[in-house]
Image 1: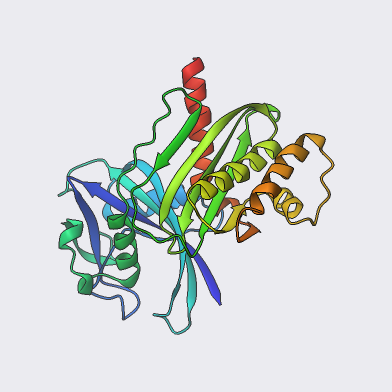
Image 2: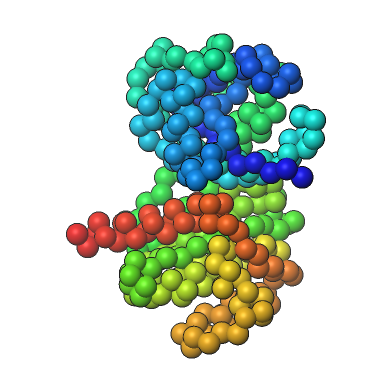
Length: 297
């Protein structure tokens, strides 16, 4: 199956989201509204692609981007199925709602309240994205002591079928000031919890392990029975799966704690995820480290 990475931006102003009406491209998309965005070019970062597409398709300059979600779905609308990995940003732009200059790929635009969007007038992908955004309340992440970040999100998602944890860890100096972060999603790919902690002076590998530990501890606390744990460190993933021997003694206690935790679930799997698809957990790590620097500064 062919795969494709793309970005989409929820451009917001005054409680409304910008939608563009397609005038070119696939027949099943013509005349339907969609969010600004498209394919990520070779050697281009998703954030750069999001800014570029907003500028090309609307003429607006991006003021700020917030990574909202990363998910995949299979698009059956073309001649053959395509698996799309979509990086979604919540975006603010400079200018007013009337300052739109659409590209040749579109012939009209609207600023619409989510509650007023007609599902028959938008593309399948746009329908998926708006449904996700509509179900996810705004989350304010605070770190009053500059050490820990934990955000509980009100949700009605069922978690008895299990959950997915994306975790990450980082050290500025290796060893140096370090933090770990994680996000927990239900099996419908909805965010249900995010958190992390400042770790003090550790290494990158220690921080990666602590991210896994923190995520599993929170999942256990939430009563989740089955977990797919994703990390972007091949070393950590292979060590947790028993394929690599742990030679660093400093990792043994954390590794043993994780093994103890896995025995308290019905099922735990450890999988690898590419770094570009683990940006939310990585972003949590940087939020904590930045908050620590600000606190000490």
